[in-house]
Image (tube, rainbow, N blue to C red):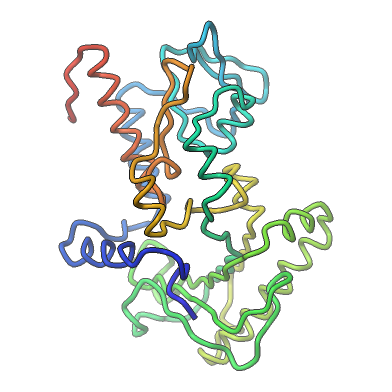
Length: 309
C-alpha cells in the first residue's frame, strides 16, 4: 500500500505534518460543514446574498467582459466581476462554452494525472470509539480482497471522528471508510442504471460493515445510520471533473513546471478563477484562500484599501 499517490511529492506529507506540529493547521470542529457555515455567516453579515440549490448554467460575457451569470432556471444575475470557485473544467468548458482557454489549464487537463475519486461508506454507530487511535485515519489490510465496483482491494482506510463531539451524540461515533476509485468511467456508466447503481452501493456498504465487524466486534449490530457516496455523488453535488475531490497529483515535475496556476483566462476581462484547481492539490480551505487573494487584487485594481474586519 502507498501513502496517497505513489507519484506525489513527499512534500505534501511533510508540509501537512509541519502545519499540524506548528499548530498552524488542524481539523475544524464540526468538519467542512461548520467551516462553510462560518464563511456563510460572514458573507451574510457583510450584506452578501447566497442562492442555495441554484446551479449556475452560464457565465455571461459582453464585449469580452464577464458581466454576470445565468442560473439553470433562467434567472440572470448581473455583476461587475465574476469569480468562479466552481470546478475548473466545468467552468471553462461548460459555463464558458470553451471560448476562453488558458494553455496552461489545457496542458494540465490533457497530461497531468488527477487524484482519484473514491467510494466513501459512512456509519453512525452506537459505539464509543474514544479509546481508538488518535489520528486522522487508520489503514488496515483485510483477510480476503473484496470488489469495490470493478476493482479489487484488500486495504481499508477508516476515519474515527470520536475526537469531535459535534459529530454524534455522546457515546456514539461517526466512522467512515474511504475506498479509492481508479476507474471513473465504470461509475459513470453504472449511474445510468439507477437500480443497479443503488444495488452496488448497498452491496458495498454491507461488505464494509462486515469487515469492520471483524475489527470491532459488535459493529454491525450497532449501526444506526449508513450513507454511501460514489464518484457520481461528487459530480451530482459539485460538478467536479471525474468526481475528484482534490486536483492534480503534485509530482515533482508538476511542482516545478506549474508552481503557480493562472487565475485568469485570455481574452476575458473582469473574471477570475478561484478554488482548489488554482491551488493544487486542493481541498476545502483553498476555496477561501484563493477567493480572498482575488478580492484583495480587485481592491487594488479599484484603488481601494483591502482590510479584514
